[in-house]
Image (tube, rainbow, N blue to C red):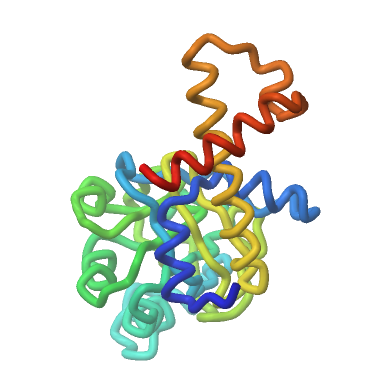
Length: 240
C-alpha cells in the first residue's frame, strides 16, 4: 500500500499509542514511547503530525541573558516561526522541567500557524492558558521560570532526544491520553496496516469479553472455532 504523509496522518488519528507500541515491539523497537510526558488536558482525539525539533542544552549565564530574546534569529523563536503546518514541535529539554520550554504566547502562535501540536520532556509556563488552546500539548509538569533560566536553544530540525526517545525530523508523532509514541517514518505504512488489523481484532475481543467469555483461547486467539467466528464477524462488520 502506497500512502501519502497526509493519508498517514489521517489514518493515525484513529490508532491508539498502545497498538503502535505493541507493533513496534514486534519489530524490535522497545523505546519509542516518550517517558514522563502527559497531555495538559484530556484528549478527545489523537494528536498526529510529523516531527520538527528544537534542542536545548544547559544554559550558560554569560550567553543567556534575557536580552537574547531581542535577537530575531533566536532559535526558540525561529522554531516557532518555521515549524511547518501539520507538524509537531518536539522539544529536547533534557527531561528538566525546572524551567519552562515555552509558554502560552508561543503556543498560541504555533496554533495560529496551523501546527498540529507541541511536546516537551520539560515543562510549560502559563500551562492553564495552553490547556485552553485547541493546540494539543504534552509536558512533564507546569514550570514558571523562563527557559533562559536553565535552557539554551542550540539547534532546530535535527535529531534529538525527547523523554529518552530518539526523534528524527519527519518521524510520525502520535499522542493520546496515554502519552506520545514516535514512529520512524520508513515504518509508518506497515504500522498503520498492522495496527488497524489489531484494533479490529481487539474490538471483537472486547465484545466477547463483555458477553462474559474467558480470555483463554480468545486473547491471544488460539481456538480455531473462535478464529473462524472472528473471520465471519469481520465480514459482517464490513456490511454494517
